[in-house]
Image (tube, rainbow, N blue to C red; front, top):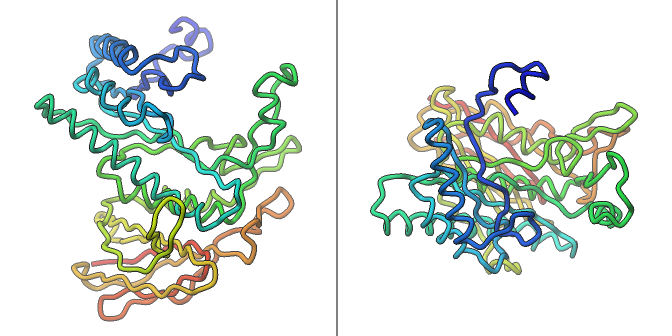
Length: 356
């Protein structure tokens, strides 16, 4: 492979130091599928070999492909019993769907995500305690996104039922405004759980279940979900704030008391900012929000971006690229150390505050 790399113009190694030891090895659909014991033993031996080559490498062992796997969470325990001292991360995957078109249940799914992360965090803690280890293993949530809009034709092509066409356009989900709210809630969960989730990779970036879309005619545009991902990526830098939220909620299939407000916050000490990402899950009611900025000193609002739309099914297209896009918010203000604003029904907001 090194000779092949040099042949194609890259004589020197790429210095990739983060390696996954397989992918979704718990899944019967995978070539190379193994039991937790089989995989754990193999992954540990591979990890030892890689460590012998380069001790600076960071290694990711496979956790559950999703939290509905019958082997979850015992898979994580067994695999980590084999590999705990040899790896740095355990990977998790989750995709979010709304085929029933029930917005309340859909926007509650990040509670399932939160439980998934918390459960695996507990398993990591159990194995660490059993081994009396000083080593820390974190979570790499290296596949996540909304994924259910693709039509049945894609499935037929993937299964080979249509033969094997050259470079078919596959899984080109067209995301709507409802998905903005979902992605906002997912990202908020990752921020709130960033003590253990150190890597979180959206799948994918362009065309295939992606925030950026192109077409064969040369057009390129931002899908609706691009914006919450962009805001979290650019402004969600620093230290995650532990926000104590007091808010009424509603009953959903996944949880009995889902708060109307989903919010996360990040303090960028070097940049002197605090940024809040907020979703109002309520279909009809405005949501007045007050955030205490006690301890931050004198503060002022420097940016307020709002995403809302009268239609949950609204999308962006090559010919209407900004149908769903952020707009400048006007009502966020700070008085006596309290940030206050009103979240519109079914809305996503980002508020940046300059702090002392």
